[in-house]
Image (cartoon, rainbow, N blue to C red; front, side, top):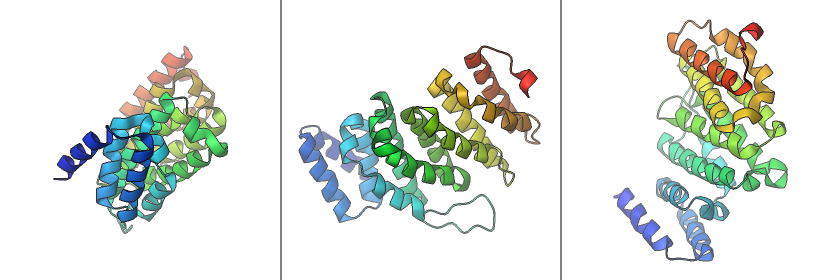
Length: 238
């Protein structure tokens, strides 16, 4: 039923002006920023792309993300609705992809305020995402954040968050998520990210000796991507 409603909403919105779209999204949020609102927002962001950017309030997204406490350890108590969080992250991912395509102006504006707000929560969820696809959704959004960020000043704290996840000792699932995220960032951002490579190599070196075979495999694949981008054999630096 929700998907049908979202389809109808998209068909209506396509006939409206940008001003009308902003008013509609504002009214939907006013009704309550729950499952219905974020389901609609995720769909609109995916379809409308950059047109949806002026309608997206990063503060509203962060407010939902802050409430979710997942965790990788058994003693952690999960708090917050994982389904809503995944929808928020899907919306964030679409918004960031659209922004990256346009040069990252939205994300980088106001001295990177939006970038910083999103990085804080995405980095935490990369570690604490747990089940319900929260961690994987955070990983995808982190890759899009890297693409929209642009420049080592923004990439440095982002890279630190990804490496913290990749070197996490509390669970192989988290390490897998971290190294996969790093691999995807390298593939999406490309050569411009090579300035951060010296920070990545010590972590990759440790992952190549990980007790989990999947972690080792992903580490090797990530190293291969880095070697292709740098044009040199990185084995001597490990």
